[in-house]
Image: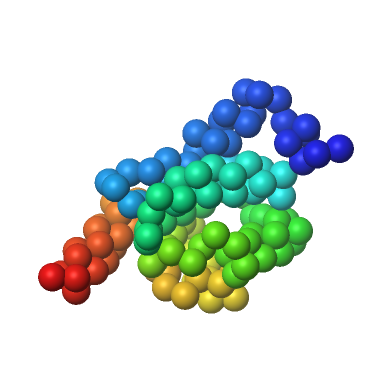
Length: 143
């Protein structure tokens, strides 16, 4: 059975719609409350479609509504971040919400997950601000 066969068309649409491209090259990824390896497969396809025309991009990852991920999801995400279509990722701003335990866990796991450049934020606007600042810095570097 294929991974996508585990989802209805509506569930696939929900997962795909949770990832959007904004402001030219910022991808916003709202992780599902219950992250799964099968859901990650849907996300990977959508992200690949969005980044295909981009030489570089930034990502806001919203885990503020997510439950603690299972080890198999963490391993699959780690493999994806370290080995697949993330070569153009300039910076990931991870929005964790007001949960201090989640913030600490994400800060600890960020490098182990394969992020070369990342920041952790308790407010979504701070995460967007970080990405906009990095965009502006890169634009100035090209002038």
